[in-house]
Length: 297
Image (cartoon, rainbow, N blue to C red; front, side, top):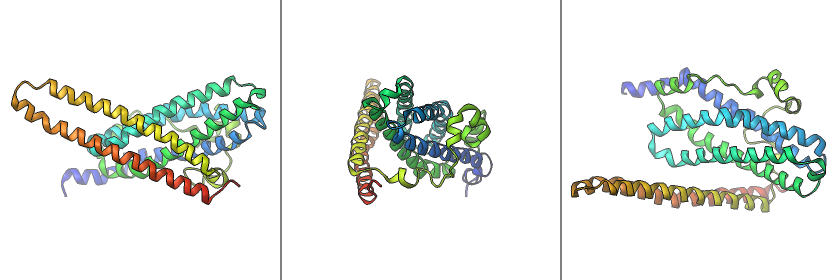
């Protein structure tokens, strides 16, 4: 075993363990808040006076901690993994894109909840906001599962001690959900609701399995649009990179030199065009089957 391999194997013992524990604790806190958002969105039209203020605090928490600190922390992790394992970059790029999309959606939800009156929430606007909140929760849970299954597990074997030290430097922000006294001071209504224990990341019980088949298909169509939107951006990036390589050609030797990178980028993109829609089809089919197995209660 090489010295570098031994360093990577031993690295998580200190900084690595601390960093990954924080990420997983963030997911546990996020899971609890998502469960509460799912509960409150069901009450938004029938009890807006109580549901709306709690939802406002929950979304504010997402913007002020999860999107402001947790996701940038993950993005730094992904960049480190990318340097060690470039073949994982396409999937990491998708996750970083989902961070931006989620941040934008959370901002839109905050604005919509802040402007709505109780009377409006009992009508069409309340129904639209409830649907948007439900969609946000659904996509965020799927996003967390992908992170846990792929990158959280692999990072502990890919990165070395220097990577972990760089990741933990100047990273002192902590999740308010982990400190109920602090949570009560900053988000009192949300704190009052978060009294149930975390059973599993991704939600539990009725709220986690109440989706109807039609809702599973609707969410699948939303995700399909994101898949092809991401592929379009990738196509633009690959085309630009290939054109830059060709523009640098001055001699036949230069052409031979750039041929392999062009071929590699093109084949990798072609592979993503096959694997991403296939993965979408599998995930959507699984969600549909689970929705039929666990109908609304």
